[in-house]
Length: 178
Image 1 (cartoon, helix red, strand yellow):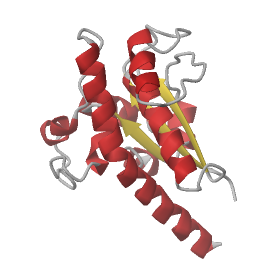
Image 2 (image 1 turned 30 degrees about the vertical axis):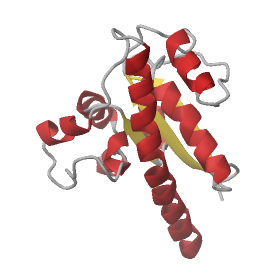
Image 3 (image 1 turned 120 degrees about the vertical axis):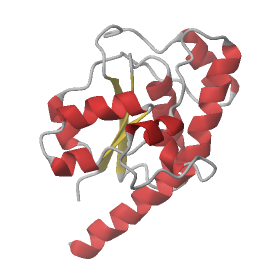
């Protein structure tokens, strides 16, 4: 069975999405799913292409005990949207961009707001309204200070276990079909 493919998405792929990628990899490994799930990240913009993770993001991850792998930012492609089983945008704007790139309704349906998996976040499921999805935005820490990066990490960690549970259920459904 091919691995389940998860992609986290932000603007430039140097702050939020690589932080989420690191946390999710750690959580999938802790759940015994490292071999069954592949996690990567991208941005909707090419403005940071080739750049490493922001040093402030890397520092916050390290301080929290996460390993910080080598990373080179890249812009998401239509093929990646089509190939991923779950796309996790950080904002409603990112979600709209991903749905625009989606080749069909099935791919568009695999776009789920990252914070939508946080049990303490507002429940906007099924509304389909961009304004409602915006309640789940993980704000860009780029213009802020260290506290803004810590806030991103806290939001990412709060949603991570819900994402792991969702993917585990998806893997169980896949196994049952095969």
